[in-house]
Length: 356
Image (cartoon, rainbow, N blue to C red; front, side, top):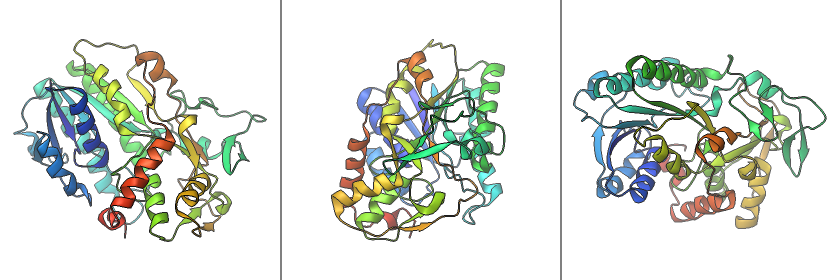
């Protein structure tokens, strides 16, 4: 089987390539990357040693696909993955749309031309901000939990946010580009007869992730704590009670291998993938973990909530479990330890990530 991974030199793309090659000898992997992300160049050499055929290209440029060999499947891991993209002053709204939506169109046109299947790595941020921000929560053990005493929005339970949760706007410019990409992908697949799967991923994390507060919060927090960099709890009283779950990208491989099996069918095309409640943690709890490992470090607090901030977001992946038998394999303690050991071995990781 031949696959093409877009954004292959990013954290997710490179992790998938390494794990998939290890799990499936004989797999032929092509990868496309434009290397604009700080730190992505560092993954080039290792991937080439593994036999990955790298293509220096930009998914925003339709002509960059003209010479890409035909493959059986495309896994789209190329995106600007920040909910603040297009409004944070670092990228323009047009750049965001061109990368996350126009890029998808170009990939889908390629799939149509060569008859390849398409898997979109989408995001939890396609879900509506307002009902998530208004979720009724209470504090337990320095973390928000959903309140049992109040009704929640449809699709929101103690198990997390399910696929039934609203995707009505606003979902952020970032979320809307991914949601539009999902719709286009499903339409292209139905119209032109190639298989499409949509995997809505929660927070992806692990060793080698580029540490930025808006894109890789677990790696950013651990690296910053270790280096005694300034840290701050933002919003919700400035206490760090906001909660996210985390998932290692390599845990996607069993599912991706099933989805790319010839003739594979399933009653649903869109599933959530996340670490779930067992892999969820607040920033205050993450600070406690860092304190136990590295000692004291002050964290400031800003009580005001920003536009896209939400108090609690855990992915309910039960549909993926029922459909594919999928569940996350890497526990949060293993994941955090992996990040920490990588941080200890790479003292300049924050600078390499382009954050400082």
